[in-house]
Amino acid sequence: MSMKILTFETTEEWLLARFKRLTGSKVSDVVVKRGTGQKIGFYRLIAEHIVNPGIEDLEKPMDRGQTLEPEALDRYEEMAGVKLDRTKVLWVREDNDNMAISPDATKAESNNTEAYEVKCLSSANHIKAFITQQIPEEYHYQMLQYFIVNDALEKLTFVFYDPRLRVRDLFTITITRAEVLAELEELAIYERNLLENVQAEVDKLLTF
Image 1 (cartoon, rainbow, N blue to C red):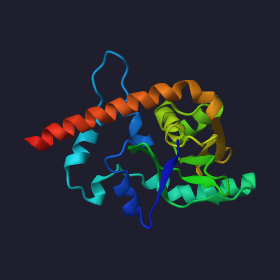
Image 2 (image 1 turned 90 degrees about the vertical axis):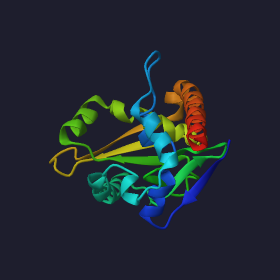
Image 3 (image 1 turned 45 degrees about the horizontal axis):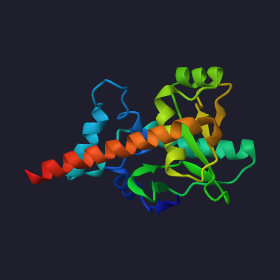
C-alpha cells in the first residue's frame, strides 16, 4: 500500500495538518490495555474535530526539541557521513487519511526507506537510553507508527542529542521493520477501529 506525502512551507501549516490526525506523538495517548477505559487522547481527538483552533492550541510546547533538532542532525550528518533530507513533511497513509507521522528527516535519495527521529531528552533520560540501548517506552508507539504509515520504510534511526553532556552527547538507536513486524498488524487494526469510534462520536455530536 502506498502513502501520500504532504509538504509545507511553514511550521504553522505543518502543525495545522497534524491537527485531528492520529500522529506518532499521539498514539501513546490513545492506546489502552485490555479491560481499561479510554485514555485522554481519545477524547482529545474528538475535540480536535469540533473546535476552531488557533495555532497555539495545536501542540504542546516543543521548544527544546525544535531548537536543538537542526544541530543534532548537523552533528549526525558529520558523524555518519550521510546526507539528510530535512523537508518538513507529513506522511499520511493512502488508505486512511487520519493515520500519519512526521519524520524529522529522511536519508537523501533513499526513496523514503530510511527515516530519522530526533530526541532531545533530559540528561538523565538521555543517559538511560544510551546505557540500556532501548527506545524510551513513551516513544514505542511513535516508533511503530513510522512503519505503519509508510509500508516502504525499512529502517528508523532515533538520534539522541544532549549538548549539555561532555561525553556521549549524541548517539543513535536504529530499528528495522523486521524487528517490530509482529506488532505492526495488531496496532494498525487497533488504530483503524479507534478512528472509526472517534468519527462515530464526532458524527453524534454534530447532529445535536
